[in-house]
Length: 394
Image (tube, rainbow, N blue to C red; front, side, top):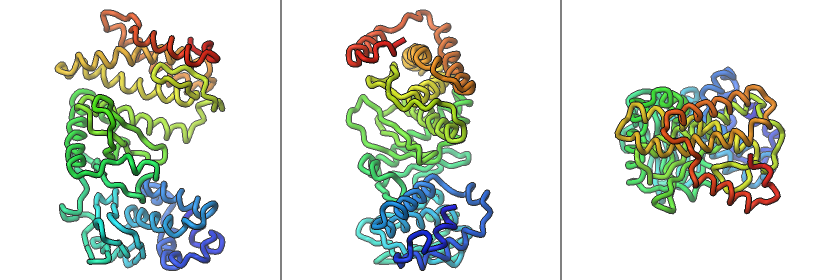
């Protein structure tokens, strides 16, 4: 286990890093925790920083001190309840966010020099200019993230700061850090979750089982909404603000389905070893690996089920939902033809067949089931762009 390895500096390659001497008591505290509790309390941010630290140990020794600081912030966020009496040196400029606790401390121009877990009800953050103390279970409003978007647990928090200890470096330039965006995103997500709860309880339950944090990102065209997830940050959805309530609902269903499938693929070997990008996807202009097309069928099957519920229970949105769903259903049927014959795992075939069943049922309720011209045009353009793979378009 990583924490046990870190407790042995010579083995971990840390003998020349002075920060570790002061951090070792933290690892000693965690080493006595049952593995089940460690796993339950760990967060995607902790796991991300553990991986960063493992890379620093084995591949990038020069980044060990900063990787350790990032990791220790995540440790305090996840395990403050067992770290009473612990003081940890940090030395990072700017805001430090504890996403699990729902708290952000510090500001531009300040350096956070140390974290102290005084007790279960008191954490102190020492900066270059002041000492800030708070109760992790009842922090003052000015320290709280935009959370509690809905009244039921678990809470969803909006994080809108470019925080190197929370996200992969390649995502930092994407994040929209303005206060207005954060507030507007909190309201939009609340409305989207409310729509799901009222119109599609099954979709709502699936999203709420995974979604914990929403990160606002920039958009580059008003008419193109952006959203994505990171396989290393389960429960975190990155999304731009340029969407209406239905659009944001679709995005949350879509992205949490990606996270759900990523977790499934970590514990089950569903797909053959075919890393080559040779498959036709009706959603993309580039050839896709088998995993990419498999993800698309799974995710859009979930989205289509949600849109079908919207058409039945949210009549003011029925026309827009039908327009979206009509295209998705045809694309699922086409994608299924490309993929199913290349899947040998019965569970994998069952997953794509479930998506096909949703699509076929959806189209039986539509007055015209003709394939839209835009989809036929997409196939023809793909064949022209990739003549060597023309045979892959079924």
